[in-house]
Image 1 (spheres, rainbow, N blue to C red):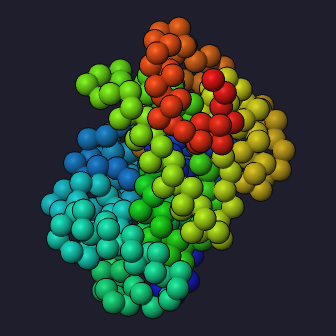
Image 2: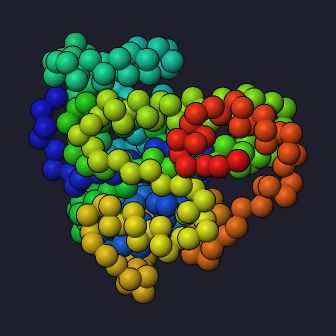
Image 3: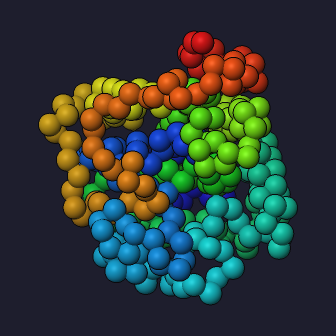
Length: 301
């Protein structure tokens, strides 16, 4: 695809669930040169609540986006924007084929021409959205926290200006403890292998897309040292050193979607308490299943 977009540079936050992607996006939105919209991708039924407090259909930003992009609830996808071009009818096959084409585009830039019309439609949709974002409020970087590896691959392969990536990691014991609160029927080993597989995929993406600068951020640092970690991330994104008192959220930029209450409850440090309630035998089972990734990310028994 031709690199003709007028979009501002992008930063993708990649992480499994329960890793604080929404929290980091919310905090980054407080920088004057960063525009963060949470997952960037509301549901087409307009029922979600924006961080401004309004539902999507009443939010000034998202209702304008919906109008200008002619978004309605009759489309075959559940969200405003697709994560990949529509190439074949079956969702799983479509994701697989899109991923393969995104990988092959590293070898030949002509791969997407095999499905030119669908690829062009995907490109134009996202390019228009990003251009509307650029016209809504001045910013130098847009944060995408949808946590979609596929969307990252496809947009990078089509020439969108993805300048940075943030890979959030979390102690697998903490992750498994959190996961099993909601899915108690899932075994410790199964939940741990979900963690392993997710982070291996992100590691592979980082090697594949060497053009983007990546930084690993630990969930524990986000929670226990929120201000210091945020400032460190902002410096990585090329904005230099800032003081906490310089950070504030402009109401005109307060339109993050897909956040939970835990993402927006301030910058007070929080200490993880999973050790107190997680059985020691389960902790050992997690360490065994996690393998070398556990120590690779700097965690200790």
